[in-house]
Length: 231
Image (cartoon, rainbow, N blue to C red; front, side, top):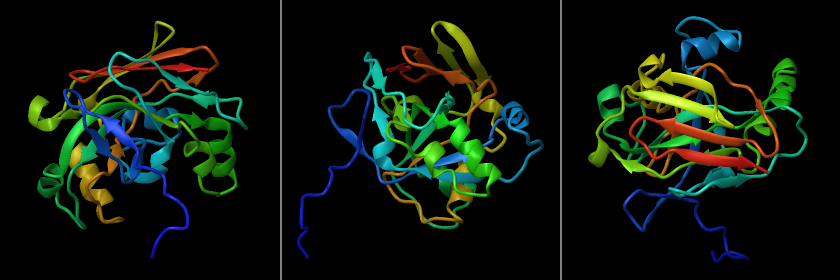
């Protein structure tokens, strides 16, 4: 069948050292994957990972050396930042083991899981989905991708977020409760993963509100920093 109107073009994430982009299929996120953040959100222990999703067109792609402009979203007075390591997949499958999951990783980027915390809290209290709190336009700023073949596997290293020059979040990738391989393997028991999928891997403690004009600088050791202005 022919479409009745042209479809939206794919979301492309810039790649360091290339004029090509990474075409995004789906965006998965894992919750409470750092112990201190789990405690600040009311959980404890090594609980099984749980997942939610954001639309691919909720990504706000930011090239190296640029400052992304993120409009403050509607229907909220409590917009929170969550810095995360983002993993990009070039293959997938179902019911993967950790070793097979590792082979799916194409590369890494710095991302922000922006959250309308008041809407998320309201949804939680009513037993409703988190979509309005997590999946709004511009809800997932992301910096350029680095190929794993160029930088190696990221298992440890500083992860840090500054807001207007002050440190808000600081941790280490080694502090993840569930490793990248374990996350991908567990996720593959719920969905068939495919090339083009992105996985946001959780955030350290220190999530807090931001407002208009705030400048967010997110960094993970070995990756191009992500800089975003709330407008």
